[in-house]
Image 1: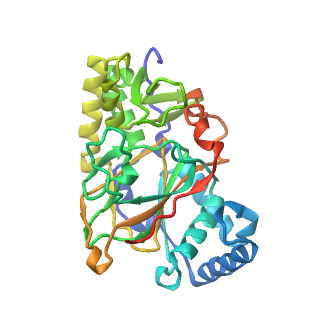
Image 2 (image 1 turned 45 degrees about the horizontal axis):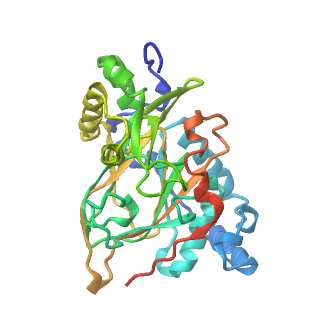
Amino acid sequence: MPNSPQILETHCEWRSQDVADSSQWIEQLDPAEVDEIDAALGHALAHSEDILETECEHFPLPNLQRRLKKIEGDLINGRGFTLLRGVPREKYSQEEMEMIYWGIGMHLGSPWPQNQYGHVLGDVTDQGVASNDPNSRGNEIGAVAFPYHSDGSDLVGLLCLQSAESGGISTVANALAIHNDLVRDEPELAAALYEPQPYDFRNAEPPGSQPWYEMPVFSEWEGRLFVRYIRPYILASQRHAGAPAIDEMAEQAMQRVDAMTQNPEYNVFMDLAPGDMQFVNNYHVLHARTAYTDNPATGQVRHLKRLWLGTEVLKERPPYFHRNLSDHWGKQRTVSALKPS
């Protein structure tokens, strides 16, 4: 922990009024770019229908790749979130949309495994898992609102295949601004979150390992801020004998962070339409969703695909973020393949 937490990366700090104009963060594809994506899909499928056999060179985007590289840089060194819009969902099957999403994602980073099953392309939909199941993961839980959190990679991407009948709005919060405001106004709370906090492995720990691990909410590395915050996992760690108790100051700090994430000053809401792709910097931006209602009878069942990506823009990371906690997940690479019921 630093002796005195510092304000970091102010160039990536924003408030809701700074990004109120959605044209700043919605990347609308033009017709030529849509055609290029369609051609790349044909090229990829001619090589293989298996996503796991598809590398970046199999999804060529000679013109769009320059725009995607700029987006990748902005995600790490700028605003930290974007929405790519314009792929015509109605034109493609689910499998084709997944290949398009995979191909575009490969131009932004390298896919990382998301769970103990080795999923490098995951499903975010109601999988019948109860929200109070201590081993549940957010992508499996339906209907209920989900709190602001970060995922276990440099970038997280979500592709909307189908939206819910109502609700399910995606929302992001600038964790960097929250950190810096804590440093400015309540530095003792910020300092508490530079200390390691216990996290529940959710029954996905390496074989023979303890079911919890420790890492800070805030880390500073070479002048950059790295955030890992999953409040339900921190609270769930307390079910395990031997897990460190949550320090009183850290608990107070996390309650303050939770309150700040609910302050509209730090939030942007976006209603993902089918075909939309959202990408977020996990270290600077927390993400969440509102409660929603599905209607299976009409096919209005919220269904997203998820990518975790490691970016080449970010050269150095703290030890906690070297994937050492999830290396066992990568022993097999698989694709989650849920279909509408």
